[in-house]
Length: 287
Length: 169
Image (cartoon, rainbow over all chains, first blue to last red; front, top):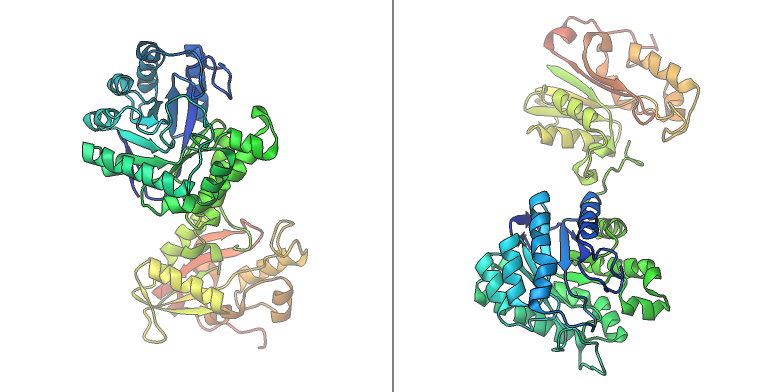
C-alpha cells in the first residue's frame, strides 16, 4: 500500500527506517546520550547520513519515571522539530507522543507523523492528525495506561487482540479524516505484552500484514529480545536483527530502530529473498 | 539487410535486472545495435539462453522475432570467458590470442579450442562475409574477463563484400 506521511510519499514496496531520536535524559537504550539538543541534532544528522527515511523524536521515555507535563514535553520537542524541519526538508519527522496537545504543537512546527505508542490513550490525537494532514501510527497496548509496565496481562489470542485494536484505531483515524494512506498499524512489542506475547506477535506478524494496513514494527533492543537471549540492553543487536528478518519476510514496512545501518541491510536482504527487491548489482554467473 | 552482433550476456535479461545495472554500457550498445535491424528480426544463437537474450533485446526495441522475412539479423555470440583471473572460466593464456584472431576473422574459430576457452562462437557462422573492420563497432571490451563485441553491419558494408574463404578452404 502506498504511504503518504505528511509531505512525503512512498511506493508500495518501499521499506522505511524510522530512527529513534530521544530528547530524554533516561531512555532505556541511549540513557540520555541525546538529551542535550545539540546531541539530538547530531544524532539526526547521523541517521540521515545512514539513510533513515524517518526520525521518531520522543520527549518522554516509555517506561515509568518522573512525570513529564505537556508543557515540559513540548519544551523538549517542539522547537527541536522546527529545527530539524528547517535543516532537512526531505526527511519524514515523526513525534512519539500520545498527547493531542503536544501533537498539535509539533505538527505546527513541521512534523509529518504522530507515533502514538500508547494506543489511542488520548482520543483527540486522531483529530489532530486529520486537521494537520499528517500520518498516524496506531499501536496495540492492550489498553494499559501510558508509561506503565505490563503486569500479569493475558490474552486469549494476543495477535487477534493486536489486530482488533489496531484496526479499530486505524478505522477511527480514518473516520476522523486521516487519509487512508497515512495510517500505519504497530503491534507494539513489549507494550502490554510479556516476552511470550512479543515472540508470538513476531511469529505471526504476517496476519497483521494481511489486514492491508501498512505495518510498523518496533523491536529494537527491547526486553523480549533480552529475555529470550539472556542479554543486557547493549548486547541485543543480533537478536533484534533476527526478529527484524522475520518481520521483513512477512512484509512489515516500517522499522523503528536504534541501529539504522544494520537494520537497513537486514531488511534489504530479506526483502530481496522475498522477491520484492532486486539485488543491488548482480553479475555473478550472468556475464 | 542489416546484421548485428551482440554477446549472450544473461544480465541483459529483464528477469536478471538489478537496482544498479551492472552492464549499463553494454546494454546501451546492444539496444542501439538491435534498434538498427528494422521491425522483423531473425535471431541466430548457439543455444536457448543466447536466443532468449536476443529475443529480449528485440522486444526491448519494439521489434518482433521472426523465422523468415526478416528485416535484419541478430547474431548472439562472444569471445572467450577465460581472459582474466576473475573471468568465469579463470585465466587461460591462450584466450587473448584466440580473441585477437577472432576479431580479425569472426568465422575463424577452431571449435574445439573455442569450447576449451568458453567462447560462444557457434552462431558466428551466420557472419560469413562480415568483418569487424567494416562494421560500426559499438562495444569491444572484456569487462568481466569475457570478450564482448557489439557491432552493426549496414546494407552497403556487407553487400560489397565477397564471401570470405573459410578455414576449410
